[in-house]
Amino acid sequence: MKDQVKDRAWQIAEPILRQEGLELIDVEYAREGGRWVLRLYIDKPNAKPGEGVGIDDCQRASHAVETAIEVEDVVPHEYALEVSSPGIDRPLTKPEHFARFVGSKVRIKTFGPMFDPPRKSFPGVLVGFDLDGDQAEVEVEGAGRFKISRKDIAKANLQADWE
Image (tube, rainbow, N blue to C red; front, side, top):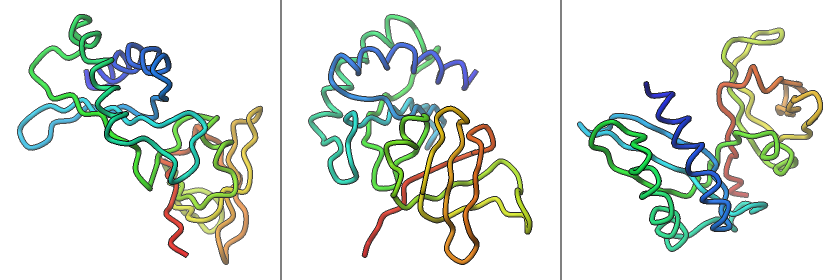
């Protein structure tokens, strides 16, 4: 049921947010602190790190989608709707995200161990993304370059560059 709620919320919210000039990055639906939370992560299209959404954008997005989600009865029980920026560790969920952030520091985690020696975590620089092959190429300091198919990626996030 959780995946159905997430998928339906995504289908409803994405076009509404696009009309508002915002991009839906991710949807979470989870039980937290005894209550259900439907959380939408938004950003501005083509935003670079540090140029993302603010609190006014989150409020505008919440007002824009809340009625549609209620009318469509997406969540079959009481819940809280939260709209948030993706933060400094912004998830990369779509091929366009990977392509947009080539050259950025990332951490990619795979569903299972890959390569030799086996590893599941790839912290490094995203040096390329092949849209046709749907593959990310990450350079891990001291370990080399790895080409990872998006179907093998469990989670990919930008990493803050504090230097």
